[in-house]
Amino acid sequence: MAQRTFRIQSSLLATALLVPLTAAADGLPPSPQATPAAAAVTDGVAPWTERVQIQSGPDTGSQRVHAPDVALRIVTPDDSEALTPKGLALLFSGNEPDYFRRNTLPGSIVESQASPAITLMPSVAKALVDGYFRHVPDAVPNQASTLRFSADRWALVHQGNTRKDPLYRLNHSSTIQQRRADGTLAEIISCNDSDNRATLDAWQANDYARLKAAAQMITMKCIEKLVKRIPAMYPRPLAAEDVSAFADGVVPPARVRVYAALGRTTTLYTDAACREDYRDRIDVKYNNAGDKGVLGIPVTETLRSKENERFSMLSYQEYEVPGGKPLIFEARFDASSRLYCDGKLSGQFVARPGQDYEVEFEVADKICRLHIRQVHADGSMTPQQARATPTICEGTRAPVRIEPRQDMQVLLFNPGQLQIQDANQGSAPRQLSDDASSSEALQQMLQQASGNPGTRLCVVVPATDYSSVLHDAVRQRVLDAPQVLPSLWEEAASVNQRRNAAADAPLDIATAVSHCKAFPIKEFVAQ
Image (cartoon, rainbow, N blue to C red; front, top):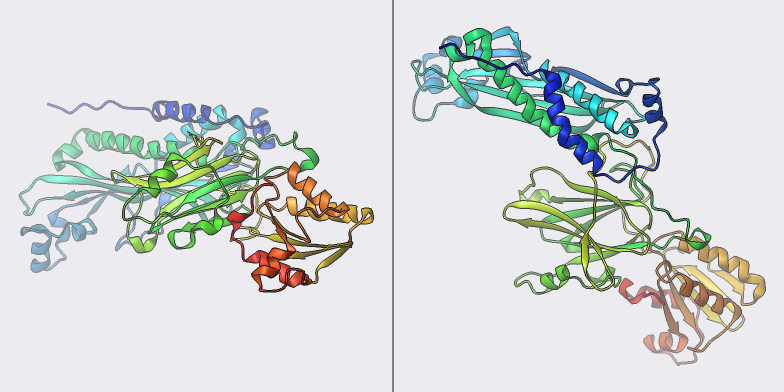
């Protein structure tokens, strides 16, 4: 009985795959407005094809003993006549035949049967990408990029231990590569299929009908992976948090608790458009997390459960991050652990000013999960919606720092005088007369400190009830924005007691700085 095949048009394949894709796009927060590129697309002036090129060809990066399979390669025992009888026996006989080496034999090429990565996949992808940009036109990128389908293996390989075994396995491998305008790799999707077997006659019947049907199924499986990654490859503009309500443009920071575990790393990018365009990068590991970074985020059920775990040491870190700016979290196993997660654990969202969050990299039932939760004042939590992290940056801003910001300004008050010293620099202290004439200079200093999330104040005063023009101004500013400038207030007598000096001994700014630097971050609380 002749085998029948049902032809599936590439446009129908793309339509079927667009359903989950558009549903995912609809679930994203709305962008504030369409980009200029999107407007151009709407007007029909600059179609997306000018920004996203779809190409196909051989996988030039593969390390192969022969050229990549652009067209079908058939490997039979007769194709290995050049091998010695002993080598042939190793390939096609015995209890453990050399399947890997057999796959590398030259075989014979059928030019009429191209790899799906050369013809079918690019055709489906073109319809798919077109539908995606029609549904979310503001996702059309400003910079050019390429989606390249690279063919690696497309072969029917004899599977028997002897020449009499009639089964041939269809081996396929290819990749979808997203490349930036300069040709560098931004994203790669691997497609591998090697579980379809039939006799060679069955594969070749009706002009390779079975092979063509298999190519369509392989294309569906591979393009499904592309469907999941397109929102990250070409994301919509991220909606910004409205911070206009905050006085003087001073936006309170957000806070985040990141849990650490042995053999795992969770990376935090602050003010991050993508992995290459951010302000700070912080790698939280088991051996560098601890209470030195505890800021007072409310205790959650997650924290309580980890405190009660047996044979496990609690390890986490808390950070202040810019409020109203996007954050990216990324989790992975360390290379030394020899473990890995299937797929990328990464997400991006905008941190709300004054809000608390926690992030946990969990492995349970052999499944990796990245949990991002919003923490409320009573310790309750709600899942934080995050989108896939963009794979290509539209901006080119260079990172500013690679360590958490832990700046501190030390203020030493003496009657009639204020000295200010940056605890992380060796520059000369700034001296201000403690009267109304210095109020503007003090406000400028406080404004600058407020603009650097993570900056804290250590204020040393002659006595608890000390009052002066500048002192009262500092106190009022801290009270107005307690989350912006966490502070610690110390009496001169306490400083002297710690250094075994008389209670009324005079203090200099260097002594005050040394004293303040001895306190962990968790001691600096909102006043």
